[in-house]
Each structure stands twice: as C-alpha cells, then as structure tokens.
Amino acid sequence: MSFDVVCFDCDSTLSRIEGIDELARRVGLGEEMSKLTDAAMNGELPLEAVYERRLSLIKPDQQSIAWVADLYIEQIVDGVKEVFATLLAQGKTVHIISGGLRQAILPLATYLGLPESHVHAVDVHFNDAGEYLGFDQTSPLARTGGKAVVVANLKTATSLVMIGDGKTDLEAKQAGAYVIGFGGVVDRAIVRESADFYSTEASLTFVLEHIL
Image 1 (cartoon, helix red, strand yellow):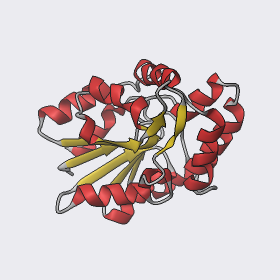
Image 2: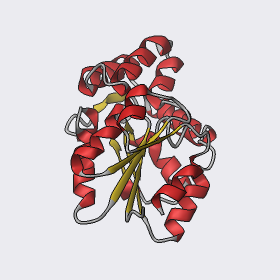
Image 3: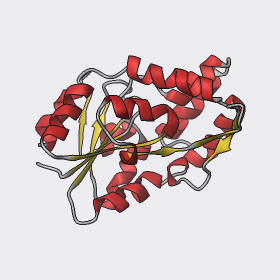
Image 4: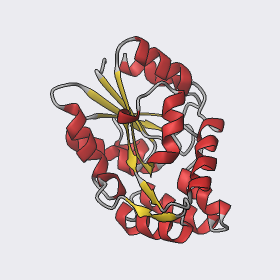
C-alpha cells in the first residue's frame, strides 16, 4: 500500500511520553492525570470530559511548556527520525495530529523537518508574564471526534494513513483513513482490535513497509 498523506499522533507514538501527564507530574498531580489520560485513550471517557479538567488543575506556564518540549525530543521513539527523513525524501505529505499542546510539540516537529502548518494540536494561551490563561476551546482536537475532522480536511481526494496509539486515532477511520495502531509504547486492546494494522514493535521503522 502507498499513501500520499501520512499522519502521526505524537504522545506515545513519536515520543515515549504523554506530555500532559508529564506536566502534571511536575506539579505533583501525576497519578491522577495518568488515570484520566488512560481513560480517554482507552475510550472509557470522552476526551472533552477530561481535557479542560486536566489543564485547569495543571495550569502549565510557558516555562513548563518549554520543559516538556525538550522532553518530547529527549524521549523520541526509536526510528522516528529515520521514518520522517524517508517519507519527506520521497515527497510524501506528513502531518502531526495530536490532542496535545501545540507549543510543546512544535520543537519536535521542527527537529523532524516539518513546517509549523503541518502540526495540528491544541493552542495554549498565556498572559504577558507567561502564566497559563487557558486553551483554544474551539479546537476539534480537544474533543471526541476531532481527529476525524482534521483528517477529513487533509484527505480531500488523496489516500491518507493515520498512525497512533489511542482511541482518538481510530477516529480517523470515520474520515476514510487507513489506521495503523502503534503499541510499541502503550499496548491498548481497543486499538489492537480496531486498527487496520497493529504492531508492538519498539521502533517506528516498521511503518515504512506498510505505507510506501
């Protein structure tokens, strides 16, 4: 199979971390947030039920966003750099579609050679002192079904594949995408059962034989 447009989730797919969980740990709320994230990614809770609650408790400021941005790169999944280099060299259109925080993901995207316009995530708002003010509540990626909305806008008449670890990535199927489930960081039963293809390989390089 060959796809013109290749889309990746970020947390537990391109990087071994869940960014919002790491931000929570930094302020002593790690265990509680991990449970909420897991519930959303396993389809037990709608994303919108946990999104605002998590951020309002953590209140991530610009300094903590910069810290987790570094962590995304430091904890990059094996093979990611090679996969992106190969896809871009072959002229594929590559996007990151994530329910994570856009400002935290942008440095990883730059590291992988993607323009900012190819990063679809949730913007965070700060005041002049860099303190947390809120997030973009109009973003489809902060609610259930949001990845299907973004994928539908990207797909048009092209063939598109979505690669990710969570229930939200399966939403891309609603927009006609082929979904590859990645369980190399977190192995989720719902994704294993519902993805078009599934792998628990530790390195992301396995995707190349399935999408080129």
